[in-house]
Image 1 (cartoon, rainbow, N blue to C red):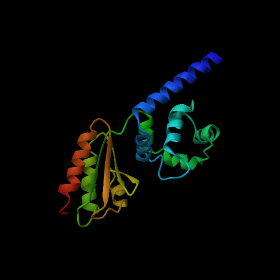
Image 2 (cartoon, one colour):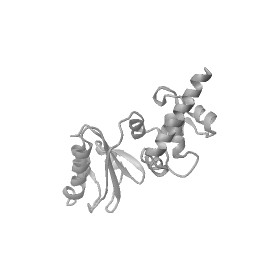
Image 3 (cartoon, rainbow, N blue to C red):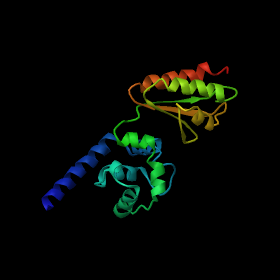
Image 4 (cartoon, one colour):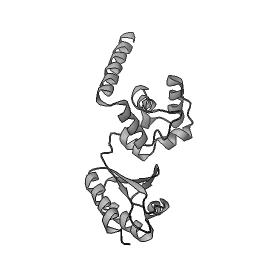
Length: 190
């Protein structure tokens, strides 16, 4: 048992060194913010995101939120409610934890005079629905399903708003580029 723990400790130190070699603190912070795990300066930081995902001897996908919150509290002293953790373990975060890394994104400025009202929103949703990738629009830090006209309308996007398009999947690059073209060029006049 002691030998096994020493080997695990050595393996974890090697793994931690490899993470430090591959990712800067800033990159870890960016990943945590992109996924919505870290939303602002506060109780939970990106290193705790890494701790939860890698070092807690817990399979994130196979445990309850209560168990994960208890592990965070016991291991690193962070007290977070299961509701707060549930909000952080959003769809993009889960995709990243499952290894389906978000690979393609673009940020645009909405130039349509009327914003994304019903007609342009339906064009965007129709175009997004042609792709197999998971596609998200982000405005003011909130996520919206690009394949849902209702989600796009609820964004209440106006001229001049910055919108980030993020896609994850087999056709992610094509999806982002075609949605960028639709929003920047095709719906400007509508």
